[in-house]
Length: 366
Image (cartoon, rainbow, N blue to C red; front, top):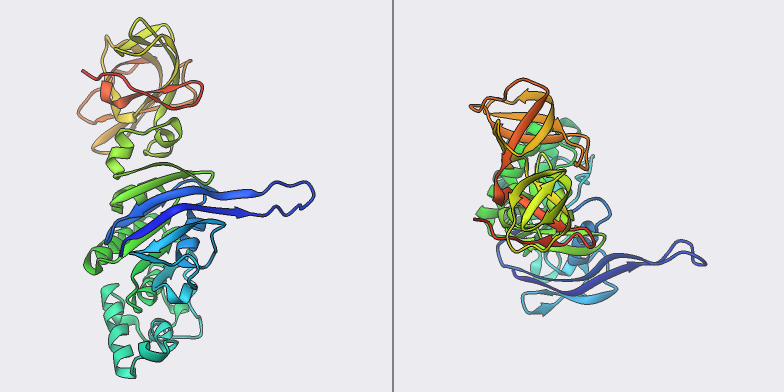
């Protein structure tokens, strides 16, 4: 099912009616979600991603704009008539019901032409349970399940209606790290098997990048960038997107361009042809540093953290905007012990941004 959002806007009134200003949670969001794709809505808390999800589901009504499912305008359609499956962050399972009863519940409320026989309902419930691999837990109650198992029940309950659209609101935030990794892989597998158009809301950029076909990065209700995860990581349009994506995060420095060369501090670290002389903000991805005894960027060495296949070098520099600079290098590379560490930089991992509006400044990478 293709979903089209046209100038979608949501404004919440101020709680202080006399002095307060309205809160624009989502501001003029226009986007076409392709049929059968998994889309990640990504951004910090308060950016409007969950509000967008709830407007698509029908639980919240837009202040302006339209929502289309295929060619049908569903903006005014009630949530129960949109054919969506919604999985909440807190699972929202019925504690007094078994797993089977929780999964069956949405089917038992179907009326009219959609009403199913008991046999059909049981068949669908078992199919959904097998899909999320909990068919051996059907007689247990939620209190007898682990967090990951409860999450699977919530997903099965959303899938049992065979929805046109599956909406997931931060479904992994209550799980531990290893279980989150396993469950996100399961979500991707299920989405591929069913072919259901899926929207996945998260503030965890690693989750979004690992399983999404496209990601939408949001800030304060405004879409910052839309694209394939690797493309957005490699080619962020502004400083916010560059800083939000990446683990460890991008290293940010104050710099300047003079005569086609980039300076960090007093050192000319890179040729940046075509860029006018100006002060800039410099972003260097952790993997963009190459240890070199004669490298132009000299940092104070703080520590070296061995991570197995990689080594994380923690250093500092007077021009850095954060106390620590993290560079990720191959474990085969040796970092000489001493007070300083010197680097050359990989040009395609160095990003320049305007000091005034934080927009991207492009230069030719040779």
